[in-house]
Length: 95
Ligand SMILES: [Zn+2]
Picture 1: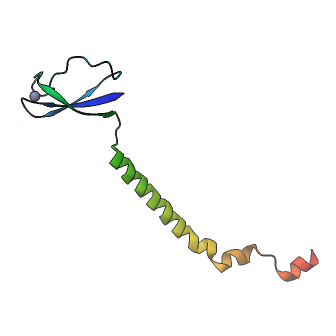
Picture 2: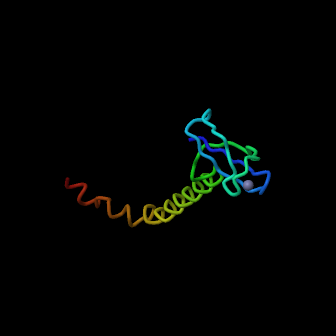
Picture 3: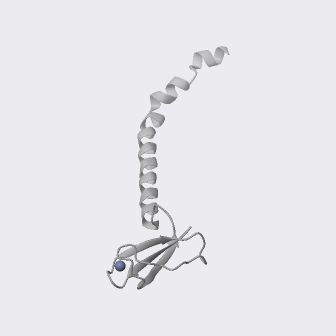
């Protein structure tokens, strides 16, 4: 859903307007004072997150994955971990 932001020339506050389609742009009024003297500031697609927020969220997710990988690494790479899985030489010979 396209979203437009309008700034009111009268009260200088910003109104967010959502439209079903890009061509569906009915008369826009300032949400705060009702003035029709509004100017379109920018258009973007409705999203609860801005691109910057998405990047920040991605970064923290990535950091978490790195943290988890680091947290896992010591036990995975611990010699005892592999020792447990190894078949003793004596038994391997018998098998
Ligand atoms: Zn206004």
